[in-house]
Length: 146
Image (cartoon, rainbow, N blue to C red; front, side, top):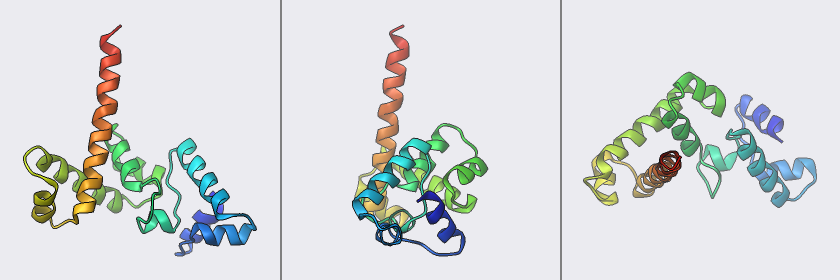
């Protein structure tokens, strides 16, 4: 499935999970499960309609890109790992940094208006920020107990 999705994307196409299911003669549920497992196991985001167009509950490429950024991975490496252009990676990182900067002093709506971003996008960046902060706290708490 990964090869099919990447090849379609390489040829400037974007397949949906239903397209892949039809091609392979399997259910969309199986395709969805297999794609999700593959992405988690390999820490990549496959290029299908849900991720390219930010639809549904797909693992977002934003989350993965920002996660690598927060682990001090350089943009060219993030681009290679996620299959996104360096420009796209930089765009997500810059937007995240802007939201993160304003988050402590503004609410979602104010950030949205200030940055001219949708409120749902602002909330998505805040959720990502909070998730990584919680992970960092758990890591730090664990290291302090030794």
